Length: 230
Image (cartoon, rainbow, N blue to C red; front, top):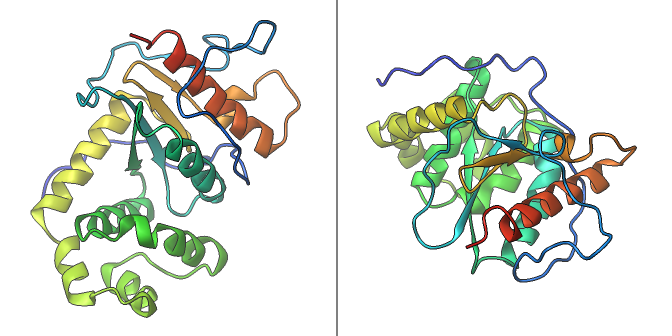
């Protein structure tokens, strides 16, 4: 078993998010004259040490999240919609955070599902089971039982949970979480140089979760069109 680095306890890990999607352009564009512009140190932060990201020619956006976080769940479809319109310029990677035992168990489940190629398909269902139905999913056995009606192969899933490859993915995720100093979710890391979130993007304004979530993605667009352009 690979060692897991120290990570924050999730006392208040979930930050404000959003509940619905919004339209966007295929590529990020600079804000129009007179439009709202994000401020460094208020609406986004610059990482003290840049982190190498995807080298496929696109800007990598990494979402740090937790499957039992209601704010992450409501942010999920909006992020999907936003990325669908920017696939040519943005690559999206999800990193499930770690923490106390329950969160670490959910992290292992996420990467096991990913290794089986069903994470994208089953993620909405897992959100529902954990948040709405409050299903106990703290062991591979409980997770397989809860997902039985999805057609998940329980034997393959249990093997994946105990595999070296999934343990290695968890370790790399924990290291990235620590290096990016992620203490709330959902959190977005942009181009390995900046991070923002609905909570950060909405600072200094009275905003609904929907508005603050949309603004977080506006911040990402502004970073792509400005400091990360080229």
